[in-house]
Image (tube, rainbow over all chains, first blue to last red; front, side):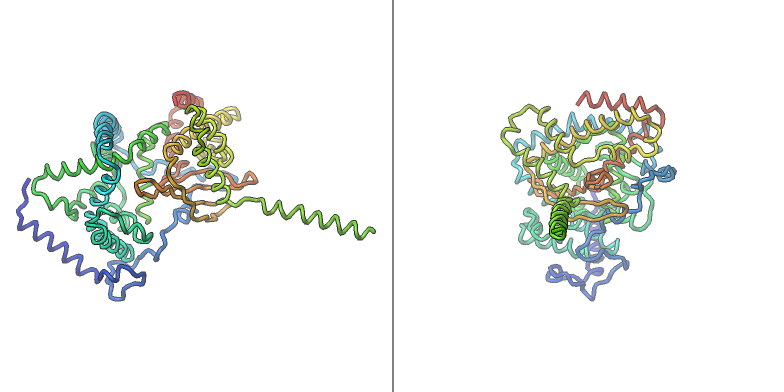
Length: 281
Length: 199
């Protein structure tokens, strides 16, 4: 699939203009913690500086109950956390993904991991993470998280310059410059859009309808998508990135399955809980 | 003479009480001491020489000091807990404990060369607390690992672990609910028995 370069350029310019207009950030501004007075925010809501809303504070009123252990506590309790009308198909896709992991992804990642030293693989991961800056940055702005956007920019700036185009995660020396990742799925959630049905997507893994649409739309902000004309090259790069990431995470999925009575349900539940945590941050 | 004896008795009484107050561990201390003890065992060469199942048994015993598995089981089963007989409840707690000890010990062994950083201690409502810790992996990632504790039993014990926002109790509750929706508690116990035997 080839996209007309002129159109591509136009999109890039539009995105950049959007970014420039909606922030007045200078590199120097990224390093201090005082709010910039000329900052234009899309919404008033903002994460207090240096503080992440504690899961504890949100959970205080949840189903952890008192000594009496009322039945009311669990009467209308939404234990499933997400609707799963497509459970038949999802289960099949889950089994497919499970097979793909053990037969394809894991062996390839292990081989890759034996050949390529860990430092290099971490560097590759850092570069990909750095390149995806626009996705996270724009989503911070869309959610009105001005402070977090500042931190994202600070992290990007340090890692690109001092960190040699993202190879070294120099920003990790500054704890506040390690914001959690934002994406369009989370933006939709912040805007009040419901999560929709659960989808186990072949090759890609668990998604909610909201997250899935967001992930597809996020590619518009992803520089890697624009850098290569050929769709297949983009996909190959994505595959390579997955192998690289997986090589450092072998054992996690297996541990999850080991701990599970019902792996399909465990993964679905863990996915939703994790998304809720990311949305809250 | 009487006054002196009273004075001595009073002083002794006070002296006895003070150290007991000092010994009551806070939630963070409980978790920190317990986890550090486990990590120390993991680093011990004599321990490393033992076969895997002995290792898991040793760690399991140490974990037992900080976890309240009965509380964990109750919260995971929710309404269903009361519907089970005392015998079923006891067996469930035992099986669940074996499963979780194995998993937790296995994970600790896998991450044994990582650093554990203890951060905040937050007091929650209704006599509960949360201790926040982070697992610092060798490739630079920080994995949040939060412990939830209750002092219902007299000392602080863990009843839930939250890894990257995923609460273990909530996760297992969904799984058990699924099974108990169509099957009896005995079937659940059978599934647990098979699971523990296999691992």
